[in-house]
Amino acid sequence: MEKSNIGLIGLGVMGQNLALNLADKGWMVSVWNRQGPGEAESVADRFVRERGKGKSVIACKGLDDFCDTLQRPRVVMLMVTANAVDEVIENVIPYLDEGDIIVDGGNSNFEDTGRRVKELYERGFYFVGAGVSGGEEGALHGASIMPGGAEEAWPVVKPILQSIAAKAEDGTPCCEWIGKGGAGHYVKMAHNGIEYAEMQLIAEVYSLMKRIGNMNNEEMGLLFTHWNETDLRSFLIEITGKILRHRDVTGAYVVDKILDVANQKGTGRWSVQNALDLNEPIGLIAEAVFARDVSGKKQLREKLGRIYSQESNLTLYQRDELVRPLYETLSVSRIVSYAQGFSLLKKASEVYRWNLNLASVALIWRNGCILRSELLNPIAEAFLVNPQLENLLADPFFSKRVKTSLPSWKKVVTMAVKEEVPLPAVSSALHYFYSVTTAHLPANLIQAQRDFFGAHTFERVDEPRGAFFHELWRS
Ligand code: NDP
Image (tube, rainbow, N blue to C red):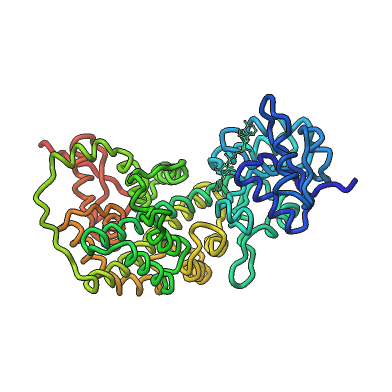
């Protein structure tokens, strides 16, 4: 019997669609899913009978016959929830041979992936942590895939993963080797951090349009759709245009029926937690995560809203007065979110010795993933021209763009402060910009305070860097 090229464990939302994508690309796929008690038909059998009908997909009853159906070296891809990965690995390993490959396509934490790569290598297996972005649609039609881990596995999994990846406009697959250890899952985590920031920025601009521009859903939807024809062109802008104009069967706008509490699964939070460990300032991304946390405090917001509610004397702005500044503000704030995200990647690459190719990262985000947008092209170009680029804000293309938008950016933040509209991400982006572009921060005073109460010492402006001094403040 013909052996399968790849085996897939976990037929949830992502697993099913990836299996179909693999089969459509000509691979023979074996599938297995754990079985619940008392189920007459196995999940795998049902999948092959229904969505997998007529495709090169084989349903397997147990992990033993699943592994038997795979050609050597075996490639076993896991599409299970992150907390199940260790358990599934231990269950499948008895049926694998030395040199076989396990690919974890779920949203695992990069530290877990790094540990698994090392532990499994010592046991004779190659482990790949592949970040997959693009949701259900991407899994079926082409995702952005970020594989990293045991490099020995790459020649084997490369043709498989690149075949199911989205293709950029120039035909390049949005899947390239990222680096060793947990690098693939780290890049996916940073992708999600930027995704949180972009979503929050769009939401803040929407909030201003609605509250001080008095724009209705149709107007806002059309404006986002129009912006999708400009250099703001991106998946998130495109879907925002559609969401705002979407009505239910009664004719009501669905967006107005949705409770203003944003949930999260954790990858945005992980980005911020890791940034704190690496001393990397990603305040805009952090504000986007915190904004979801604040949204979750619905009862408190309602209670405090009653205590602090004032006579509403909101200024309403003319559409023409607002639209251009908001467009500029969104453009420039997005640049800052990428500046922070790539700065985090650069720092992680140095600390964990991954030697990340940042241009390649931007290139594989150009299609298939939630971040897909026009902006990734100039970002890739910036890192191609200067792989050592410390911060995107130092690139000539981006500095010109930021300088053009700065007056609008300041105007929008000022308006929001005056009209009491919360704008945490946009404001944080502006203050990050002010901070990283000034040679003079008040950190001298903080150093003095630290030295005063804790003798922590300080460097002096009139002495070489690296020499530390202590002042007898109380004498
Ligand atoms: P689902 O919840 O739809 O599916 C999860 C799968 O994991 C199911 O097949 C489930 O089996 C299996 N599973 C859970 N626990 C165990 C266990 N202990 N042993 C064996 N199998 C187990 O999740 P998704 O398909 O959406 O996501 C899978 C992974 O991909 C996750 O890590 C997710 O974060 C990530 N991801 C998801 C994206 C999305 O848009 N949905 C996008 C990118 C990544 P059973 O059916 O029996 O419960």
